[in-house]
Length: 114
Length: 110
Image 1 (cartoon, rainbow over the protein chains, first blue to last red):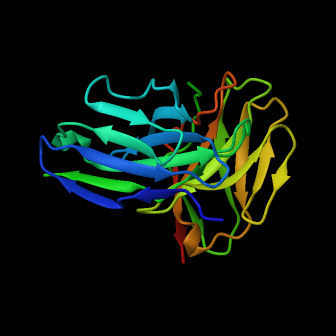
Image 2: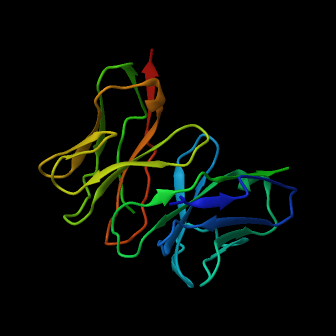
């Protein structure tokens, strides 16, 4: 059973470009979570999605950031007009519906803005 | 958001037990306590979780205080591969999201 798959693992973007990070949850999981980790810092919650619905986006920056989890296909975290401060590791996690318990993380996508 | 308090860092000698404490004084009765760990340049890895009773699995043991306001992750014999940042967390208010504190950086000394 494949784990949470994230791609790309590493992404370099110039300031002002767009970054798209993809996350395929574990098989059977319908809940997806995105976290950001700045260098030498902890994990910060960004957004929690179920299929076709954003449940909690309290950790998302108000501008330039968006997330979706369509009925078919992976979840996408989109960062428009990237700035150097967006350089971070972005982790996706997933869980089954109504689990109430464990979430499982992917290996992360490392974004570098130059 | 769920609030947890952990020491910033701890050290342990290899092959010795390690007790990693966590305070979660605002936890409610139905919130599960979760522990994750993160090795350098990797995603967080699930370690263990529990509600009220102490829990054991192949990785660790979890001891939960009777009032549930604190818990302790126990690694029975620390190895060099256990060097990581350990996060204690819980879900509050029935939400699915897991909120992480700053974690404890565990160093294992050969």
